[in-house]
Length: 482
Image (tube, rainbow, N blue to C red; front, side):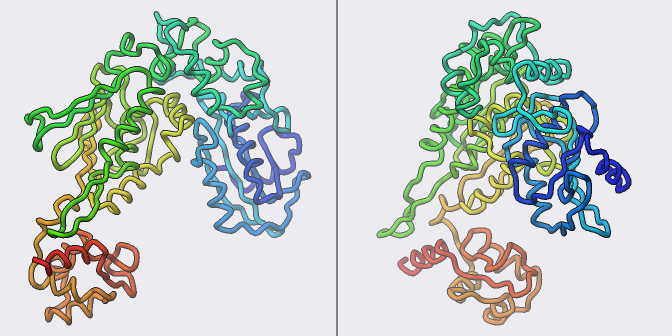
């Protein structure tokens, strides 16, 4: 990160194209445009650009006091999905006698052109501007020279006739660009494709990303470019095959079919009897979590492999496996906090199409939804070298009737119809408060979601209490009727 002394020098260099000064703390579009422009590094300075908040155009400070909310808002621009591809940036607060500055240091992108809300912003001298066609072409040529990923490479032997151009124009372009940008774009189709990383003019052929996303027959060039769903009887692949389906063709069409399939066939709601006279509705696998895990497998897989993405359903769990292990900076010790992209062009396209929301938030949301639905956490197998596997357990609520409790657990359940503290519970059932007793008498009730915390999921939070859930109430009713 830049030093305080260097910041002072940049503030005084009024015409420096690597600096954007502002006294606004709320103009998110201005901040996003500036960060986008620094990512594109149109002057090819190969140096970081700086968004300096709290400085006037003449370089003087305006007495800003930087708070946590402002820092979070600026940091959030990096991952809110409006800048594509995602920028590499860091922020830091600097304190001076006449006010504070919040500085965002933005690194040049290896994959220009970078867009903010569909528009390509660049620096022209000391000001921002939207790139014209000639400038955009220069940026794409920079991108081509930096190609390091398979999806951005030219698919030699393919031609534009191998793409569904109508699909590209009707399903992708309107989502990628605002209407005014599209109406003003008079370029031919090859140049439009090139601008998005889907065509290589040097070899006059589509890139692999274009074949995968819009190809008429992707398997002609990539044998493993499909997703195989199989429903097995029992708990292993040795079981009988009850159902199977191949999701093939280009991703724009296949992703929509997979999304619908997960919603209607995997995440379907069904009744589970809790007594001879009553039943509750449960979802075996929540839609968002299952969809997110499947979309991640499609997005991050190794498309050079002949192995398809595997989507296997067993009696008590789903297994999703894709070719290619953890990639780049992602390692077993930092997963899922650190992410990297094997296929940045495909990742960008899936964001445009709405199948990926915010970078690096998906796994966190998956685990939250699975827990809420009673499935328990997804299990990631990070030991595989050439593949990545995740297991999603079925909701424990499927086995509602089979859950058995000890006498003390039953007493705890009835006692907690009104929220009680741990001390109150242990006193009520007449045992000492020890870790082994907590694990034996209370933890199983939390695991089955018969009990819930009244505060975040930590036993040592001050004032923590435990309360009967709706699910626990249903089980008690069933128990009493029997």
